[in-house]
Length: 388
View (cartoon, rainbow, N blue to C red):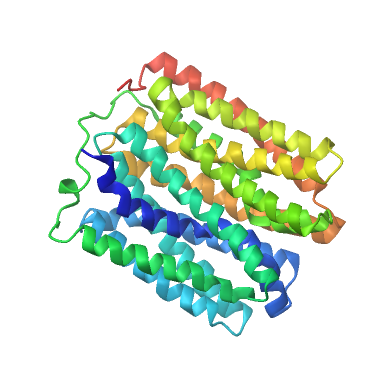
């Protein structure tokens, strides 16, 4: 099966990944509604919760309808909710449109696109590439919104995302015309789920995703405010935001190469090492360039983690069980995503800085490393990792 057939799906997934550019909307939101740092962080926290709930429940819908048709519907739904957000005249109306609406549709798009990729013949490449596409949305829209806000657009910068989602959804309509069955679109991988995989392995995947995502989600949710608190220049701030989003994307994409050469567990170990190095540089550096590089490394490590976890899940449990089991594992991401931006903002409001929040992130990353060591021991003992 030609991987180019997945390109329209990838475009919708990439547009939905604009959610990851959220930190650049924090300042425009504060200007528009006069909210505190904690309230700004809560917008991303609410978004993560809704995103996670959509990832959990969307697979049930996919059992009853074509995944491609569902993806089109989710894309158009995201457009409608973003229009509500951009036209909001109160903080809670914005939260309703962006966090409860768009983020929910974004989660549904994410798990649907991953399910299509995971069931393709070349799933080891298609899955991380699809995850990378989602991260690319943040790489594009984060810096773009920063520049548009500096030009006076404020929250109206969301129109760029609205048009991108609309265009990619319409393209998918034409690309899948006369294709009523999702199996006919991506192809089905001939991989049998391993009956040996245990609940212990499932729990360890959950734990390492929760702890391993904490620092990355805090950086993605509050990067702009962290840079502003350090009083870096607009040029350095914009460059750092672009580097953060790009690092997130490249980290996700790199797992496609790791999967061809080595076990996805290598990707998990790399993710923790890179994130830990970034956090240490951020804490021990003198600010400015060191801060920007450190945050970019954290985002790079998070990108590797975000792609290696679904790859490991697919390799251990097989494509037929992927959507349901990864939906459970993804609740770890949701919990970390709710706590990390909120507690980061709360710590800033209480202390006037982010140092304590970064120390907490380093502790969570260390716990993720422990989880990966235990997971490797379980996988080696039970021999459940597929080698195709």
